[in-house]
Length: 114
Image (cartoon, rainbow, N blue to C red; front, side, top):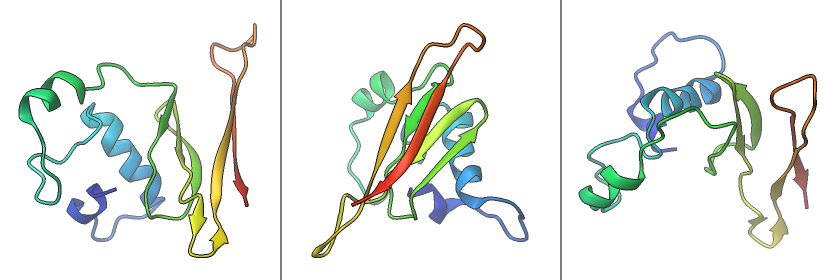
């Protein structure tokens, strides 16, 4: 999440990872930092395909931060971290989406350690 390097959050309390995921959702863009200095971006393709016109039910944001599953602004945000770490196993996310007549969305997610 390159966005963590750009956020100014002096004295901000609460959950940093949920706040960063909230920035991605509120900016309605898969890659919210423009222009980025670390990755080349094709402006035409970015404008055509990087926009998120509505809040998704599930967003998977892999990063170097510790794994997490959080509900942020009506979206289940998952960071599975890394499948492998050096010579050892890492983590992955298991997600279950099941219809439920009483709820519009029924999503279960867990992080599994290898």
